[in-house]
Length: 281
Image (cartoon, rainbow, N blue to C red; front, side, top):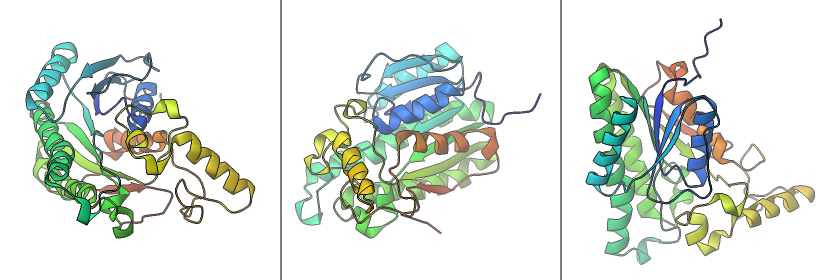
């Protein structure tokens, strides 16, 4: 039988923020590949969900800004499955339109706590379990805002926090490689859920009115294409080289690769998934 390095049968994957827009795409991709998927999210599921493969789908309410909540989630996972093969650090958010002149100390503290402290604490807790078996994969979801000044100018604290994660990824990859643990990053560009209903209460689609809603972005894109012009959610003249919208599953497939045996020799890398709009090198 031909070996399938993208099969996750028997493997355990923890996805933070798994009930959000991008998170759902990540969860679905791993679930279809037969993984046991643990959704570690403070937000409740948007709808009743079940596994799409042979593995289990478990939702554990987790606040990544609270180390005790993280430790409790990891303990539950270890008691139920006995291991964690992959961690997808997807939870995170910015303020959207908080340019430097408008950034307050409360904004700074909130963004750093969620995007940096939460990711660091989650990684620290999970990596301790991975070290015991000498194997594991961590994938950090960053952002195109950390790859491009124009992309991050409207929310420099968020862009900076995601830039931290790029450096964090590389340093951890060097540190944890000898322990058999790989660490990589996926940097999404514009990712638009298929419908409004596929966004959680805390999604930036619901807290940043300037962005509109996914249904509006999808219709604007379709109308622009029908006119022969093409267009992105916020700027009809600003589509990347691949003239289409990114979807949550696009991020899920990138995470699947990095977490899988197919990427057994890949660590410390940043993969931009944005239709070619951002090309790190």
